[in-house]
Each structure stands twice: as C-alpha cells, then as structure tokens.
Image (tube, rainbow, N blue to C red):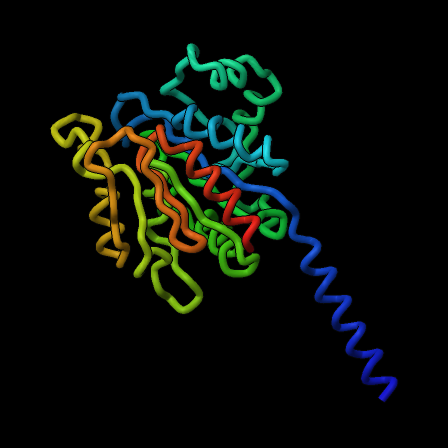
Length: 249
C-alpha cells in the first residue's frame, strides 16, 4: 500500500512539474514576404496589428516572442507615427531589433507558449498559411498546452489549414473572422496575387464566418479558444479577449 502511495506521489509530481514548464508567453506569427506574390508591389506585416496587441500583452505581464517561416528579418508597414503607441515602439531600438531576429518554427519550444497570435498585413497571405512548421507550433499550443489560437485581419489566412489531431479543420463549426471579401479591392493588382479569399477559404473549411458590414469598427469574435478580429481597429480588443480567455483556462 505504501509503495502504491509513493508511486502515486511520484506520478503526481511529474505531471505537476510538466505543467509548470508551460510559461506565460505569447507567440506572434509574422511573415518574411516583402512583395505581393512574385510582383514588385511592396507588401509588409501590419505594424499596428503587431504593436497594439504586443502592448496589451506585455502590460498584462506576458512575455512575447516572434516567429516567421524563415526566421530573421520581417518587413513592417502601415505605420502611423502620429499614434503614440506606434511611435513609442518605432523609436524603441530593442523592440525593432526583435523584428529583424524573429525565430524560425524549428527554434520554437512550444511548451513556452499559451497563445499564438497571427498578425496581418498583405505579407500574411504568403508563406505563413501553408507553412507546416508554424501549423505544428500553433496546434501544439492549442491542443497540448490547452492554449489559444488567434488572428487579426489578413492574419486569419494563417488559420486556413490548421487541423486538429483527428484531422478536422480548427475552424470547423466555430465562429471566425478576418478581413472579409466586402472590403477587399478585388480589382486591384495586389489582390490578384492572393492564393485565396480568407472569407471563402474559412467557410469552405467549416468556419462560421461573421463580420461587421460597417467595417473598421473594432469587430472581433471569441469562440472558445479561437479568437479573431476583422481589421486593425480590433487589434487591441483581440488582445484583450486573449488575456481574458487565458485567465479562464
């Protein structure tokens, strides 16, 4: 009997230690792409969608890291230096250097993270959705760590091919959001380079796509541990929903 109790205590301690290894960190997914497809049209990651969420995360006490398909430098754009938060991070050399030294997927220790946040911008349509390494990282955080997967605007393209261990698409049966067709400039040259419509792809994979017809009005959705936002105006609200959800896990 005493041996059984001792064995139980050992197993309990091992499980407890294993759980404690999951640190309070959030991983922001970015893209290395700096053109729209093979054109010469400049593309970039959306600076506001990165820094406004980052600001919420760090102010709430979470550590934040960055990953991209190839690692290293990413390109940022859509910068509004009249916005105090954006200007502060733009002038922060230590922060900006982190955007030049992002991790590659194979450098990520998934046990370190409790949430994944896909940033947007035109770059997010390229290199990220089909990247198996990033898919594996995201689903490990979601399934093994019981963590959160989230995205903003064109970052929702990164959700397109995520699948659970049983082979179902992550978005299947869930409310999901991203930059909708109604606001895409489908006649523009840049749009012709997109591999797919975010809205149509998520619907095709079983997602219940919902969006604000007004647009640019801080629209975001939380469906369990999947949290998504429509456009840059929702960056902070997506981050806040993530923080609230993490406290409930």
